Image 1 (cartoon, rainbow, N blue to C red):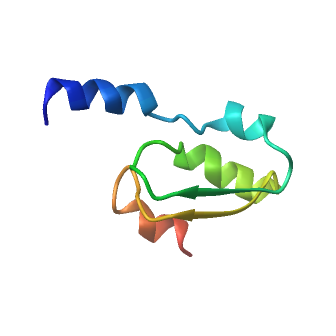
Image 2 (cartoon, rainbow, N blue to C red):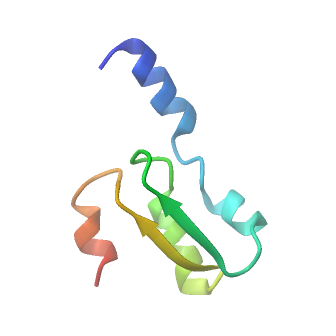
Length: 72
């Protein structure tokens, strides 16, 4: 990974987090098929459990093993 790639990844890490989710209309749906780490997965899970987020579709994760935790 080049240094330029690292800078880009740091700049977008947790772009969708608890703060941004709380600003969304209740019942928002989140789709991330771009890059793992853009969505704060713990914040997303909390938003799903509270109903702030009605649904989410992710095909990329910060860590692959999170797939097993989120799909239960």
